Structures are given as structure tokens and as C-alpha cells.
Length: 437
Ligand code: HEM
Image 1 (cartoon, rainbow, N blue to C red):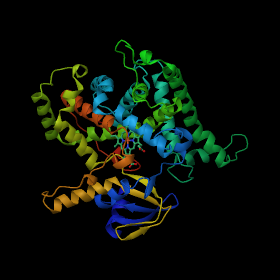
Image 2: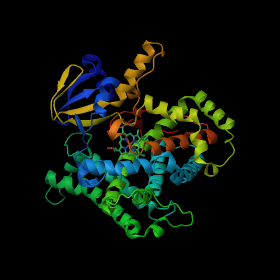
Image 3: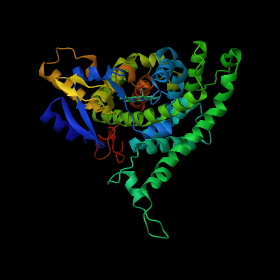
């Protein structure tokens, strides 16, 4: 856990040797060293995601695609989420958050992680896949997203606390014998994820296949102002820019990657934002002041232009501060492409490198305290979304979601914790599922 890592950092410094799932690894902390790692993608290091991501997400997208595919799709994805196109999906986020907060207010007390999960997953399905929020099958897709995430994150390790152990210790009712573990892994752990993949692929095929063959006139024609989906926007961008190599399979893989990389990280971040607001009434009051001064206090969320929401700088600082103090993703993994030197140590080719986002933030906070805050920190000392070529593809989406959530919460609710708070720090930082607000 996080305290173990803190202990090791105190004992061994900002670069130390460790093991992760049986592979020799090096932990790297601090802006100076992390900078070299995140900027070294493709020359010194390569990103490594769990091997289950290849089976379930596929290899034609951003995460596991070869370098050319990664670059092509990531450029388009970043563009589709850029400020220029934010107006295309922001209304969906605004409508989703307004409806969910109304529901929370009706309940009075809510289990915050579960509520954030519902809200984030539903909006993700609408924004990404273009499934309407009142679609009778939407729960099916939300469940599919859950199955994908769980299958990828379940490692076939027979140790206490892992989902795999629960299944592998089950016995055949007739023979009272345990099942062979490789069969259990494929059937009980991977199969739900693979089935969910099929469901989402089929949906996208029905929605997008005809668009690939459509003429420019049909593709860009007036659809009566209906929201379609970020994936369709990516296809339109590709067409506009003469990028003819984009295939249906690329968009199908990308949708699963967004679901996998974006759903849990955003749900957890939302739970943390809400928790921090509950602990800081003066901050809530300052957010309210900013909203009143901007003339946005009485306007229904769905009627506000997203640019006016983006202009709320204090609200943005609250979202960023949440991600600094409690970074949702504590770090990311790379593999050394060659032996290279870092801070006086040799990192051997083939070793894993874990760069710590959490301890890099803590290191930077320590420096600020030491020098009285009069020295500017480097841009690599604050990296909740990573940095460099493999930086988060959904950063703008995530930040907008958090800002709109803060905005609507402070306008409508007094936020306080019911009982004790437990923050879980591994594998992602979040409030424990028992926490009520
Ligand atoms: C506040 C919420 C979020 C946080 C804190 C977060 C953080 C991160 C981090 C730390 C990485 C890894 C960077 C690295 O390897 O160096 C990452 C990657 C990624 N994220 Fe996010 N993320 C969030 C939301 C989202 C959302 C909403 C989406 C999609 C809509 C998304 C899509 C991705 C993708 C596709 C990658 C892989 C990028 C690549 O390999 O090039 N994330 N994110």
C-alpha cells in the first residue's frame, strides 16, 4: 500500500529497486526523474499495461496499438476532447450531472462511491457510444463496462484478497474437486469481459458501419441537432483531415479503452472531490461566491454555456487540488527499452519502471514547505493525468466532469460526511464504498 511505498522512499531515496508481480522493477519519484521517464517514451522506455488488456481491449487503439496506430488514434481522440469540440459533448455531461444530483438530494444521504459510479458510467455510455440516457438497455451497457474493467483487473493470482482466489477455491458440486486454474481463469474471469466486448462491438457496428460508407454530404449533413457520440465525432474529424486509415475496429477498440481507462478513474475522482468538499466548508463558500459573481447562481445547469463554466477558475483549482492531494491514479508503469542511467543508477533493459504520481506530488509539497512556497515547482511535479506522449487521453473530459460536479453540488447542497471516512489508496485512490455523504 501507499504507506509501504512512503517507508521505502524514506529508507532508500527517490529511486529504489523493488518487485511488482514477480518482475524486477524500479520505483521512480520526483519531478526531475519522472520527467526523464515520461519524455522517454519510445526511446528509453515503453508503456506497459496489464497483459489482459490485449485480450479484452484489442490491439488497434491507443493503449496497445503499435506506435503508428497509437499516434494516429490518440491525435484524433485528443482533438475530439479539445476545447474546440467540448461544446459537442458538454451538454450531455451537464444534463447527466443535473439529473443525478437531483436524485441524490431526494435521497438526502448517499453512498458516494456507488452514486458517482452510476453517474459517471451512464454519462460515459451516452457521450461515447451515443446511447440515450433513457434507453431501456442502458443498464446492460453499464454492466458490460463493469465486466470489462473487472476482467482486466483480475489477475490470476491465487492469493487472499484477489477475485481469482474466490473462484479458484470453489469446488465442483458433483466431484468436490477444484477446477483446473487455467480453465477457471478463462471461463470465470475473462469470459464476462469478452462477452461484454462483443455486446459493445455489436452496438457500435450497428451505429457506425453505415457512417464509414456514407458520402461527405450524408456524414456531415444536418441531424436535427441530436447528440451523436464522441466516436462519430472522431470519424468525422478523420474524414475532414483526409485520415483514411481509420477502421471500425479502431473505434471499437478505442471505445473499450475509454471505458477501461476512464470510468473507474473518474468515478473515484468524483468521490474524492465530494469528500474534500465535505471537509472544507470555507472552500465550498468560496466556490459559491465565484459562481454568484459570475452571474450563474440561478441559471439551470442545462441552460449554461460550457464556456461560462470553464471560466470558473476557483472551481477548477478545487478539482486540481483534489487530484494533487489525493491523486486517483497513484502511478504508471513502463519497461526499459535499453539500459540507461537515472540519478546515478543503471536501469537494466527489460526492467519495469513504476513512476509514482502520488509520491512525486508529496515530494513537491515538501519542497514548497521547505522554501516557504517562494519557488515555482516544475510542471512535472503535478501530474495527475501523467505527462508526455502517454498522457491521459480523456484529461479534458475528466476535468470538465469534475468542475461541473463541484459547480452543481455547491449550488444545491450542504455537503457533510455521515460517520467516519475511509480513503482507500490502492489500486486507485477513492473513498471506501461504505462512506456516506
Ligand atoms: C479524473 C479522471 C482521470 C484521471 C486521474 C486519469 C489519469 C490517467 C493516467 C495517470 C494515465 C496514465 C498516464 C501514463 O501512462 O503515464 C491515463 C491514461 C489514459 N486515460 Fe485517463 N484519467 C482520467 C480520466 C479519463 C477519462 C474520462 C478517459 C476517457 C474518456 C481516459 C482515458 C485514458 C486513456 C485512453 C489513457 C491511455 C493513454 C495512452 O496510453 O496514451 N482517462 N489516465
